Image 1 (cartoon, rainbow, N blue to C red):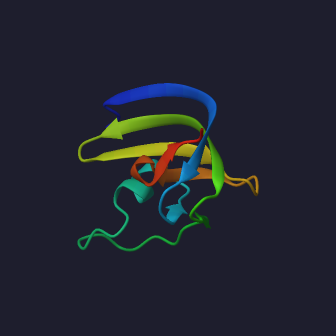
Image 2: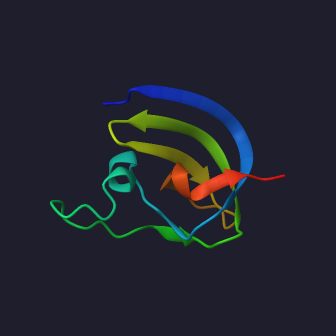
Length: 86
């Protein structure tokens, strides 16, 4: 199901919005979907929090990033809630 994958090598980004971090790419992709059973997130990224993006992937209708939070938690979040740190 992975359409495209790009390695970002731990690039630091900042959260624009509050974002949930999930254990799988698919849980992040279908977050909030009405026709799926809700999955509890591992943790949340708060607005302004810096995270390291290890890699990202595109699928049909989503863009997900595998991240490492400032607390050391690794998981998947939607990249649309993140922007590059200056």
